[in-house]
Length: 114
Image 1 (cartoon, rainbow, N blue to C red):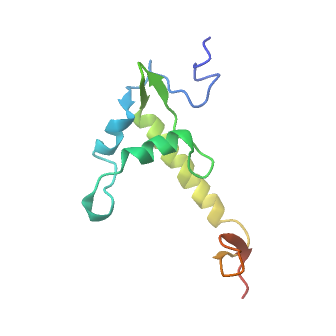
Image 2: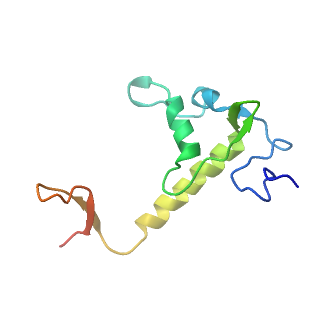
């Protein structure tokens, strides 16, 4: 098996079973919702999903002839993983808030007091 085989690399898509979509075409998919003002999703956002991820989840992709590609199935797996992450965070115990102030605690997470 090659190093990019899906069984060995969880971030590699299986092009034998799924059709490749260049990352630049992801915002043009009809089922991707529009942003504020009717604008499409920015291509840089899709690249960020592949490289940095969101909440510890990264979009599956491969480089095909110098172009990063993904699949619709990989996008759906990514969105489902994010949905499950949000659901598990909401079901966690405790109330959390983001507090910041002049004391240099910008972005510090604390427990909300009742």
